[in-house]
Image (cartoon, rainbow, N blue to C red; front, side, top):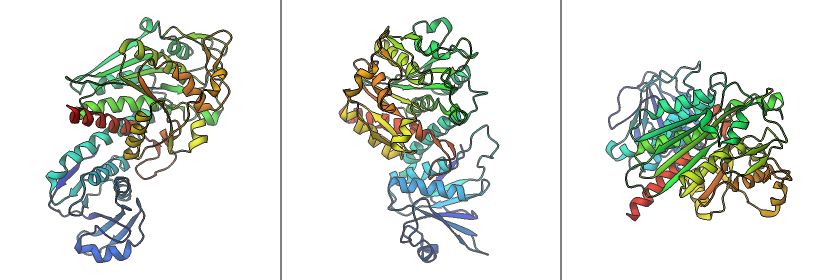
Length: 472
């Protein structure tokens, strides 16, 4: 990630970024009159260029913040850094009395909008970015939190954008081990081979690939933590659909089918970076759903970690099968207070809610509300859908405890399937297939993987930490 510095002294950068409201507000006196005329009606995330020949700075980027909420400041930062050249030094002039949350949003936007895939062909930003504030010390914590959140999103995007020619289960596990090594207090356990004997769903889904499945457990257990949260992320490193093969258009982006795993890994590492006083365990079942003579078949009966069985009726509904093992393991072995799973699970999510919104399922009103608020603060939308019992009969099998892909509303049926495995914990399921990928730059999103969920989870864990401190 490129550096952003806080200072109260403007230097001699060739480009200023001036955040402005639709009436030209926030602009400093030197460019205020010009900005007010040019920026009339400017939208959040819109940039207008004010050339200033023979003067310093030689140009000013007027970045719209809209009504001035955190999302508007985030959009302004992302738009401004995209407008600037990668080697261009930027000075971002903030108004006096700016709220810390606004600066956090601005800095997040700068980092998120300036994202480049680490192994891609596009150059990373080399130009310095300086935030000019009248009292820099007031904003130090806000900048730190923005950096941790953006770093988490960058990691989740990097992991998801990596081509599956490199990204098999072992590779992903190696990345987790390497990332965790730089964080004191984070431990990683990697299980493979005979250690997966009870993980019947994970073994079945990975059986068709030359790259065997892996189960990764990451732990952050700070002293004195009283709440234990388990995060589970679907980790299918490529999904052909298996014997129930996908069409070409449905398969070409399936390197992103581990977006949930990327998000939970990034979130737990972010929790460690912030030193949050919440015990967090992230579970990542990793497999490649491939086609071969050893691939699992429709009609096979799978025995999960908890001993229950599922009749496989569609090998392209593999995500819920690997999640069932991870959830069953968490319920039996870890016994957490609550569980949250993130999964690029169903195309029905996009049909129902479009490309920017995840589907949220939970029987717990308080948890659902807290996650929705955490997502709103991150600019990651979700919408709660019903867990209706009307479809329970659709799950019945003649030869197993349930079938894996019953008829009915796709996202709802997947959530009802998973409901059996959460045990006694409070729980929520997030189906985030649609918002995990963006076809174009869109505010703080860059084309490709979005890292959806990493910042939402970090916001949620931060709120739990603050709540514990307040109650101490």
